[in-house]
Image 1: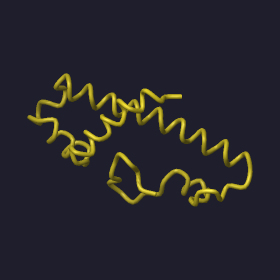
Image 2 (image 1 turned 90 degrees about the vertical axis):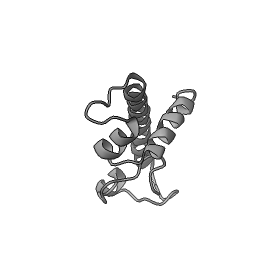
Image 3 (image 1 turned 90 degrees about the horizontal axis):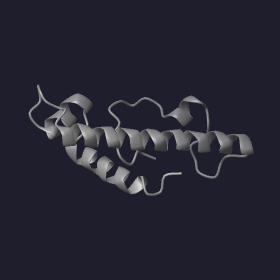
Image 4 (image 1 turned 180 degrees about the horizontal axis):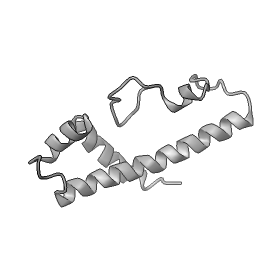
Length: 101
């Protein structure tokens, strides 16, 4: 499954692929796999909120310039991510903070 909020710039394997875990939903046979994957989701969720919050602060405080005059140019040139995806990420973080574990 592709990431929801960021387009991957490279084709590096996802963390579950590098750890040899199956990618198919429902294929985990024991509690160890479940615990590991839940910990991975928790860490990813925390990072997701931190990244979205940091990007929002960069945008709101104008910390992207110089040398790039707009936040949109900053997103594209610095991170290789379309500005529309960054806006989606920031908006998702606002919603995600309401359901944070």
